[in-house]
Amino acid sequence: MKTIQLELTAQGGIQMLHDDAVDLSEFGKIEVKRASHVEFNNATGYWYVQSAKTGKMLKEDCTSRAAALEWEKEYYSPGGPGWEELI
Amino acid sequence: MSHFTKNSKANIVDRVAFEEACKELGLTNVIHDTTIQSFYGEAAQKVDVLASYGQRCQVGLQKNAKGQYDMIADWYCVNRETPSALRAQMGNGRTAENAILQFTTKHTLARKYRSQGYNCQFTNSQDGAIKMVMTKF
Image (cartoon, rainbow over all chains, first blue to last red):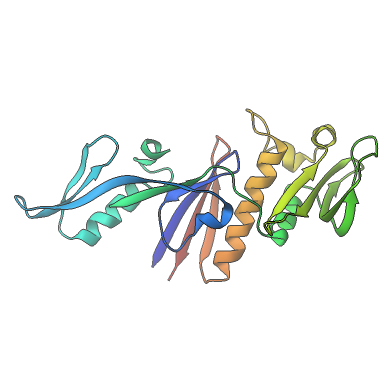
């Protein structure tokens, strides 16, 4: 199952964690910025998620890159724990 | 690694979505290819769609050179005779225009992604934002 989450702002804008399935540029000019880094830690053998804004390590024990991306997607979804950091 | 994408103010690209949004917000009388006038009846402008409520609350949609649409209204009139559904969306600095634009974008996305097989659900936030969740099996 594919899930995409976005927020329609009270002022008439749209914002979301980027997903190629939704092309926001059809609604006009867009701004894109990095939300996070997902990397493999050679020392621990796990994938980790790190905030691009604060550098804070958010999750360090993902056994696959897909798992890290899935966790990150929930974390940064509208209403999720990391959403306020992005907007 | 992910990126955050933001559009600060969405253009109106779907005329039908605008009509659906207006109906949801109480501007239930919709007609095509007509004119819109200001409060005192002057400055009539041609519009592709006119959504209205009562005698004075009228919002029009006019196609622009880019193939998108501009919203036209005498907002003084809209604010004087506002349907309750639209009034409920206003306040805290949020105008009628903001609300109609937001609902138009909501219907634009719903129409587009439902036609692609997505299930679309919406949740209203206290700050006026709408969260949209699209799922596809």
